[in-house]
Image (cartoon, rainbow, N blue to C red; front, side):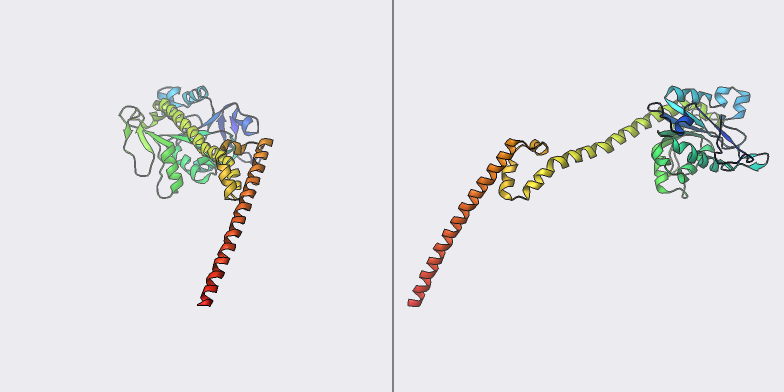
Length: 326
C-alpha cells in the first residue's frame, strides 16, 4: 500500500493505491525487469475500495470472486506489474482528499504521478463505473493513447458519445472490448451500440460476476493486442529502413548525372553496389580514363563541326557569286 498524495501537506487527508513490488522503484528511476508491462485494475462505484470488485461476492461467495486476487496472480504469471486504483476513497473524516475528490480526479492524479512514469506499455481492466473513469483518463491525460495498448471493460457503463473526440473514440473501438452480463456462453459476440467498442458475453447474467468469469478471456485478448501492437511497430520501422537503403544507393548516381550525359551513360554500365562502397584506386583510374575518352570524343566532334561550317560557308559564297552574275 502506498500513499499517492505526493504534494500533500502533513495535515491534509490522503488516500492510497496498491502496487506490486517493482512499480515504485521503476517509477523513481530504476531499470525495469525486461519487457515488463503494467496492469491497472479499476473497480466500480459505491463502497468498494482498492482490490475489491464486489463486497456482496466477498461476503456471500468467496475472495476469488469478489476481489482482484485472481487478476493479480494471473498478471504476475504473464509478466505484468500491477497497480490497483482506489477511486471511491474521496474524503477522510468529511474532508475532500486533494487530487482524489471524485473518481475521475483520482484517475487523472494517479495517471499524472504514477502511470505516465511507467516506461513500458500499460493494459487496463475496468469494471462498471471504472469504465467511465478510464474514458475520462483517455480524454484528459496526455500520452494515454500512446502508452496503453489495450483495455478490457467488464460490464462497463462508459459512453463514447458526442462529448468524446473522434480520435479517442476510434482508439477505443480498435483497442478495447466490453465483456457484458449475458446468459449466452462466454465470448459470444453481442450487438454493439453505434460508435462504441465490441461487446461480448462475460458468461454470466450477473453484473457483479462479470470480472471474475471473463478473466481468462481478457488476458487472452491482451496477448492478442500486444502481438498486434508489436507487429504494427515492426511495420512502421521497416519502410524507414528500405527508404534509407534506397537513398544511400541512389545518391551517388544522382551526382553522376550532373556531370554530363556521357559520364552518366558510362556510370549506368557499372553495378549499383559500387555506389555505396568506398572508392578504390581502380575506380579512380576508370573514372580518369572515362574523362580522357570523353575529352577526345568532344575534340573530334568540335573539329567535325568546324569542317562542316567551313564547307557550308564556301557553298554559300559560291551561290551568292552566281546570283550576282545573273
